[in-house]
Length: 384
Image 1 (tube, rainbow, N blue to C red):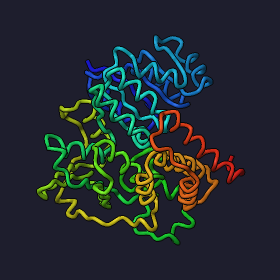
Image 2 (spheres, one colour; image 1 turned 90 degrees about the horizontal axis):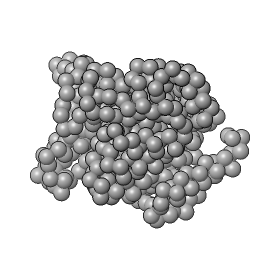
Image 3 (cartoon, rainbow, N blue to C red; image 1 turned 90 degrees about the vertical axis):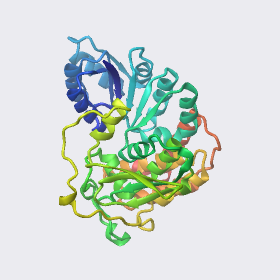
Image 4 (tube, rainbow, N blue to C red; image 1 turned 135 degrees about the vertical axis):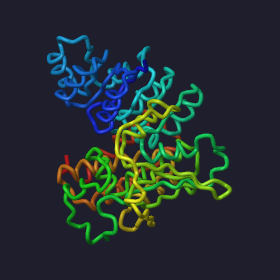
């Protein structure tokens, strides 16, 4: 019986992870954590009977305690609760699907405790890759990517000599606005941005896909996961989302991982690596598909990707600023307080304002995040 914990259990990745648990009786959920979705968490506790459940706020935790008082699940809250999950003795795999930089500290704690990390939290490596990857190597802990593109790269490198990698080919669907020019994006609504053509994801990640910031974050993440320089990471727009990413080797050979756009595949692969378990679902029909197409990304219109490369080049704390400014901007966009294109303006402004810290500690990373929020709120006080 493999015992797992899920940080972010009520979100898109978390709920799909629990679908996999339902289909694999040798998986046991030992711990769950969520933000404020008390009703959903109660349902999950009653179905999966975890030892610990964590809500981010004390208010949500108190409500949950009342609701599940008849169960054996211990309810905790906040960062202390996440850290307690991370070091649970019985836990073997920690699925980090929580959104935001609050994932950094529990991931570090879990690595120090020797837990395998199924990583779905981009911010952890984007902002703290220089801390996480050396620590994982030191502790001999596996970090298994759950993101579909990074899982594809990981699978395409399996059994290969990483020193012979000449290029990582990171695919992107192009999002809902592929082919549009800047003037066509002036009046984009929240509803428009949330209509992703291929993937079912959370609201924030879906907006990130439409701006190509999501792909920019994936470039930074790939740099740390696979220890490659950013100039060796090439983004290719592949609208069908059948090829999830590719790796080119020194001899010109290219390895690719293909499949239907279904997040359960990379999640299950991470949970059972190196085994491949059977999984129900639609399969690729090449005769029906007929054509796979590829395009160069339009980085003049969708500046989220080019700004990511700028953040990597600046290094240090700049990727944190890129990520934090985007988080704040997307939140404002989803709250209908700014227009779609202003997401780029806020990121650019925050990056221009920031003075880079060369080798930031976790506390300096979190300070940089807070400084970005303060900068945006001071510049636009009506956004508070």
